[in-house]
Length: 193
Ligand code: GRF
Image (cartoon, rainbow, N blue to C red; front, top):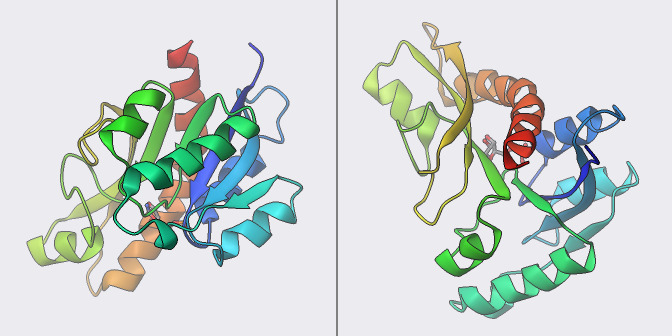
């Protein structure tokens, strides 16, 4: 199948984005990064993507205030300008409205740093530590209007070790994310057909 033009949405460092760009160096990989798009014009991931020859853009969400629909219309314009066929959220920290998700449903996935349905939302590592969980991990899932609630595509488990704090656990999960996302995105694109 021809690789799908895939936009990767970030808000920060973009380490998951880099893992996807690396995977897409394989000509057989079914996603072709066509854009790295951030809501944060200062996201370090933008420069990291540009240095790898991937088109970048930023739509600062702050001027839109509470008008999420207007912000998402601006996102949509940039996505369409770049011929986007699929979206991978990778550390994108804005909640997307039903309208946006409805327009892209079936063509947008996300990576979340927990073993969903455990710990939807934020502060997942602290919550796993507080609960005394023996294991933690990450999930790639289809994006639906309800936050972190879409069908699971793939998961990766890591142990919670004695002496772990949020930083050490987050680092272990992030490494698992980098290994999980590329094959999970490929699986999702193949499922989308
Ligand atoms: C990752 O833990 C991801 O699961 C979460 O945001 C973090 C940022 O990662 N959504 P990245 O380095 O910006 O990809």
